[in-house]
Amino acid sequence: MPVPADWPTTEAEALAEQERLRPLVRPSGAIGDAAAPDGDDRLIAGVDVAYDDARDLVVAAAVVLDRATLAVVEEATATGRVAFPYIPGLLAFRELPAVLDALAALTHRPGTVVCDGYGLAHPRRLGLASHLGVLTGLRTLGVAKTPFTFDHRAPGPARGDSTPLTDPATGEEVGRALRTRPGVKPVFVSVGHRIGLAEAVEATLGLTPRYRLPETTRHADSLCRRALTAASRVSDVN
Image (cartoon, rainbow, N blue to C red; front, side, top):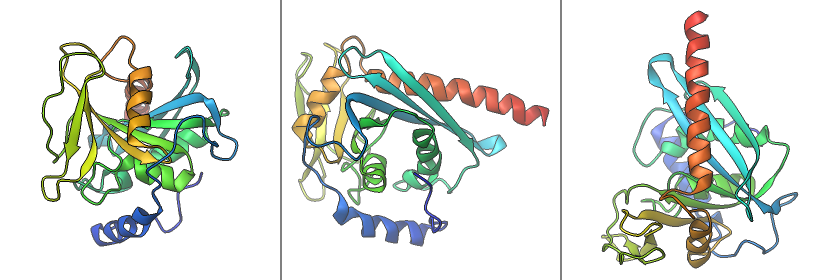
């Protein structure tokens, strides 16, 4: 899954690319439907990214879990230079080159990828999860820690309670505020690509048997932070 040769380098180019890709998002489907080519729906992956801006380093991690047991099957990292400046709403262009490299380093191809971020819950309906799904053909969903610029009512206190995450400008439902642990603040689930919202919520609950965040995200976050520390040390030596 190589990074496209014409990867945007300016805000105008990135906005145009989002507008081009947005109609390609498929906001329906379920785990167990036909997987992407060579994808294995028994496997689910998490991806996450960490930065060292002072050294111009970015590290992405991809961790594959067995969907039934949540045991780690494989993990991979990729280290590179930051590919795009920080601009809200365009974070995918900073993160995706390294994420694509990490996914390409895996020997297992998961049927589904969970992103620590947004999918359709994005001003132009193309957050990282949707962008990644369209580029790779993989089923993707986003599970974020905050609601970004969208509105929601607090869900009920029980695990599994949820409320709509809505665009204040249009009233459109772009995701769900989901309680994954009793009495713990919710996460924000949105469709990425080739999955419906109800199915994305169900998948998120299956990944959170003990903690607020999905096991996919927890493993990927830990791995990319460790890899970034190691890469920063190497950079200092060199």
